[in-house]
Length: 336
Image (cartoon, rainbow, N blue to C red; front, side, top):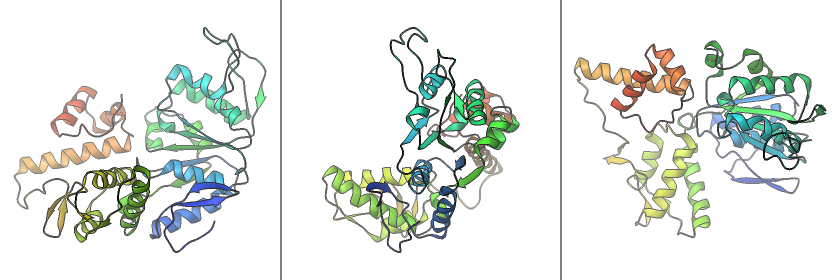
């Protein structure tokens, strides 16, 4: 993999433009090295990491640095596909396979022949569909719906998830055998809060990108903005950063972007996204704070799955929904 001292946004491989990881932090330097090594091994890969850390970008880079780079890169969002459509979309179907199937349809696996198939949000795949996917991974072949003829596919499978699949396996929500099939090689994408100075570099990159995309004037970051960017915990990671920068660039009026433009409350040299608690708190407030943190951690570990999080917290599903509302955590992505 080509290494660069300067921060870059894209690179060209075999005549194609491909996004590149931005930054020079130790976490990103390590990730680049891991991608370089894993890309050369034609085996299934599992990419893990929090929401908004760039897992699809890593999958793209794995494809472009692999021997399959001349082939297609096809992505399937398992969370966005209704359960009943997964097999027809991924494996395809023959004419007459079901009502409305008036022609043959090539599935995503066949479309990715000779290239890479990304199964994004694999943790949201229902158990029934997990069985079908496991069979394909074990046999290297599949059948279109409505056909008995096996089709062999030369496709590299890359899966991505923000959920804790090991916990999902323990609770019977994800198959152990499928997990081990998908995780022959593993890559973890670091959270933005672990990337130090990359935050400001990314913000400046997004300013340049959005200024051209939306035809607005590019503006520099003032000292309060730089301070705010470095202090914030970034629970939404790079996706949150992009949204804050876009909002500041489009809606701000000053010559430069300030911490306030980015949506932070500035107090001297300190930025806050929410009021900090007083140093001395009542026992009730301490308990409430600890409860909130426990709920956030459980939902994060469960990938937003309320049933799994409720089991880990030893509360009912209905009680967890009430707690989410009581603690004003409605902004967190949750699902049944």
